[in-house]
Image (cartoon, rainbow, N blue to C red; front, side):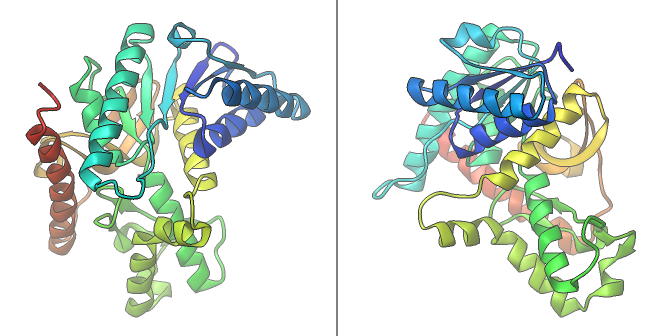
Length: 315
């Protein structure tokens, strides 16, 4: 896809690993990296460009001098934001990252109004909501990456239990990206065989709990920082599906407009992903228990949105 251009805003571990993945696989023709740390982003662009040449990829990687360099991007990935610091409340973190998102999205709207935007910044679901509310982008243009990552984590834990089926496991997760996500064992398979056929209910319950804490476990081991290989690769799948118009079905965070009984809130649901971004939202036939868990997940996101509203963020 030599004529396709991807912008990545925020070149920390996730952003740089994503750029490396896209460039080494030749998924797009151009990648533009943007970050407030100018020297870091120049170094990253140079390093990844050299990796692309080693991989015989024709992808060109450059560091943005300013927002103008995002002009005409087909896809823009936002990983910008700050981690929670000692003494910082969750509300402070939410407001700070929402302010960053507002600035970033306004820049994109000016330079690349037709771009599809993939949000990776946390807290993810409310950052997608913020990006939509502070801009004129349509709801199909802004998508949050989390469901693919959470599903990949669930697949890992299934493989860990089974000891076989690598590459043949399809796990499914819905809801917000956090403690209230909703793993869906009854929509998860190993080579087309339902989990209940190969695992006990206790094993499945254990997998569900491990999936919910998959990211926290990595943070615990690292002590400082969080996962980036799996988030970056998951994001690359979304970029590829959009640029190549693959019509892939992935769980992603999107604005609901009546689907699953909810309106004007963002949550992770299965969608068809293509050149127009969100091309279709797929409604699964959930059990009563899953509906309740999904409701709890949506409520968690609504509470964060309420915090922004109480602070007059959208006025």
